[in-house]
Length: 402
Length: 125
Image (cartoon, rainbow over all chains, first blue to last red):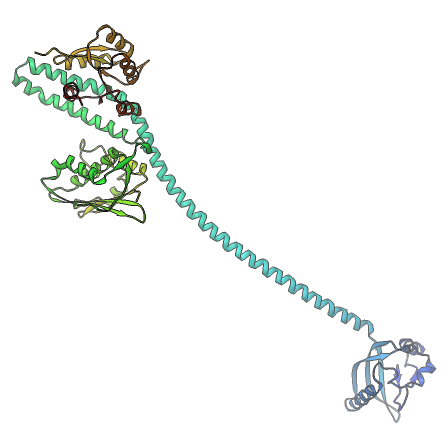
């Protein structure tokens, strides 16, 4: 389609090689007949303020004259006033002596609409993506928090598990000892009866010999009787000790004076203490109420003091200290010695039943495991600290009422 | 010389009865029974016992049950338990209620029992 350079109006000619059809398309685009369009100027075929369009057109013509060609989009107007978009390719040409501008017009309304639609789609897509991204970020954040929580929970669970395992271990140990006690109580009677035969028999036989044979003969067999009696004593000790593992019920507990219990223990062990050992006592003045099984506590402190005495080979010191910790409602009894101490290896086994470093017959190896059981039954704690060749301290804490 | 007091000793083990008699026959007049029921019969037939000592664990009737029955009739007798067990709830309950004066553990040392009996008989608490 060509439009001839004109002053006013549009000159339509047939297109080269395209014939009428090109003109027909052009007319159809604008909705004019061929005659109608011949009298129209470019402003009338454009949409918008005619004055502004005229100005624009002048600028465009100048530009084409300078550059030779130009391509632009234009808002055209149909006969019925409907605006539509066209693409105009303009080119300066010369036909004969006439300077002409060749314009090729293409209806791009559809393209424009498509572009707008596309832009809308693109914007919508952007929004969608932004929205989805936001959602994902939120989800991610939630996941992170959940993950952190899970991590925290995992740590808590692990800590709880470890505590549980410790408690289980302690429980197993306590249960083991308790069943040992139960077993011991069961067999005690069966063992004590035959022991009674032996001991009774020894005393009866000894009486008989004392009265019926010469003293010098009796003196000769006397060590045999002493040996039998010692054997019975040791066996009885074991049976009695094992029996101590049995549980202490709450109603077996009564108000106790810890200092009186400790003093009684010292009195009982005095014959072992007085020669080589200096005994120091630091008792608290603070009032407290201790509810315990006096006999069992007595046994605990006898065991500990006896170990302290045995740890001191030549000379040394034993310290008995009591303290009230009001805030924790605890009574602390600390017994320390300057004896030979306990190796780390042995310290781990100190509460094992039948573990002893003493000579055969000197210790059953039950004292500390019984003491542990008794202190556990009293909801207390027992702790050992020891340095080899320096000494040992035993710390017992018992719950009290203020 | 003072007349020997009568002591009844009840235990289901024949050896224990025999040994007990041998150990104490010089000081006391010892009668023995193999069960609570036999003990009750002996108490019935001879009415001047000062002391009854009984084993705890016996078939049919345990020591405390036997002593409770005996006490219904013979309130002036002093009762003791001689047991292979550590002190049990039943025994400590009987001690609290003064059903028994004391309890001895097997294996026993004869002089301990002798001393306790003398203490109970002559320095009544």
